[in-house]
Length: 300
Image (cartoon, rainbow, N blue to C red):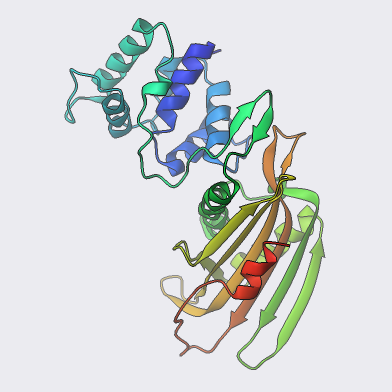
């Protein structure tokens, strides 16, 4: 088990890595038994189940370029971009062993990775420091986690998709409108039913939800009570041949997220609303942005 100082140093290094590598590393370290939503939750799990700094640094997902960036953030001397991973590991271990205090505070906080820590933990309570900024951060983080996992159901390795990411009483409101003005409205109650419905869009309908991650494509807000609301829009794409995808419409999706105290205080999906508009094969999308009604719904 890592000491408090080792844990702090390992966390500071992991925050340098790309979020995709962090989530993948978490699956490896925890044998896929932990399914975090945020990168910070993944980092906590990785550190919890890591026996030693040497074990963490030797992982395949902890690559030489990440180790070099970490050393650069500490302004460490004696290494170059051509240094081997073994040399970089040795330098980091020397720094950690020679430091009487954690090096975490010395790490540069200027990286451009959109997955950032958006809260501080004090006595197991989450203190939200800036709700507007935090809402945007959790929205982008959630979008970058949720849709690759959902769309990945068609891949050989489907990832960690499943009802464990939803509250047991989750409700999904699903609406679809075709170019012939046909309207379909359905509701699904409980985590299993919601998971099955969303899975069927990918596996049976052969569609892909491609979110718009530009400034106009998503919104997020956190209420004083701790409910996080996320809204996102994007294009609806269909894979008809296995090698060619075409845009067949657009979608808007809203989520309500709550932390689960019985599951390491992780965010889980409490509410979900999905509206899709399917158009003809010649349809071309123009301005893909959230509608005013969806944006207003976040405030209620």
